[in-house]
Amino acid sequence: MGTHTSIQRPDTSVWMAPNQRAPKGFHSWDFLWVDAGPAAERQVRAFLQEDAPPSEVLITGSCSALIRDIPMGFGMYANEVLDPQKGPHRPQPPRALSLSAVQKALGGAAQAGKFLTTEVPCVTPSHKLESGHGYGAIAVDQDSALVCRPCVEMDVGHAVVRFVLDPAEVDLSPDLPDTAERIQFAARECEIALFTLLAVL
Image: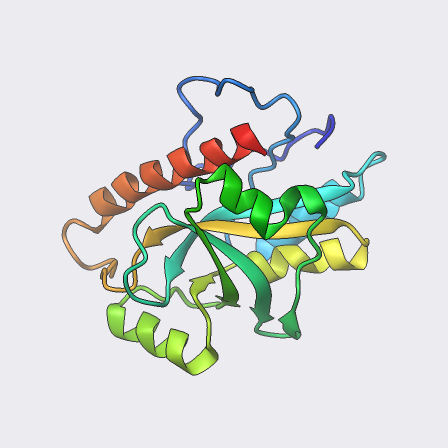
């Protein structure tokens, strides 16, 4: 939030700008597009080291569901993030980004639980369900824990809300012929949910 210079959005990102501004607009949000993986931590740290850093951050994007029957575009709220290097971390959300605020903004379409951050994509149903069972996690992504680190170091309030790109039962293996098309369709569903959330919060 505020007036910051955003890092250029990576060409490989699947998120698209909204076609229209939501009724409330997004003037109170400062968008920072970051690369997936380790680069995200460096980019967010540089952002938070600007002269007037934000007092609160919403970490968002897509994720894979690790439990059954969670639909595409559904909101997943992290009350704990498993960092592959530093262990468990509990985000520090301000009241404006609390679970109840997020659920209200999404019409109840958000579930809280543990997130798993992995270095290797988790794309097959068996891998996702095994990971969910083994770690007690509801979602997996590749950078939530990394982006939380600079927030913790600089005592910035932060919440993690991601949207399901691929349900647990869906296989997004890169060698399948229609994976790219399925990702683009799912990304659009996640985008709609994301901008719905930002327009209301």
